[in-house]
Length: 100
Image 1 (cartoon, one colour):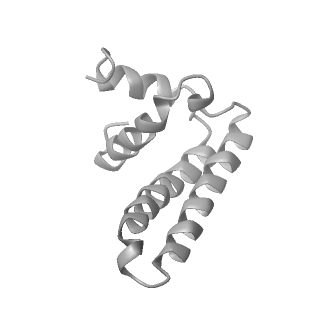
Image 2 (cartoon, rainbow, N blue to C red; image 1 turned 180 degrees about the vertical axis):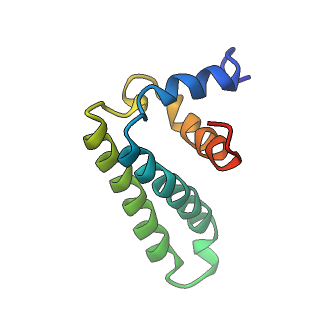
């Protein structure tokens, strides 16, 4: 459950804005890049220049997200509801498991 709705409902709604295969490919690579970047940012105070790699991954990941939505001709779901920022990762995990 996430904000009173099952994850399956969130992911199903997310799917409606991610039907174009090019958008799905962009998200398949962009979402994990963003997640890895966030993890690297956490460790960057302890590793010299790690923040540069984290920033590069973060920016490239977001560029892929927006390029994907250019193909889709739809704005990202989080423009309508900020909670979709968290649904994308769950969608990606479901996709990697073959559930979507």
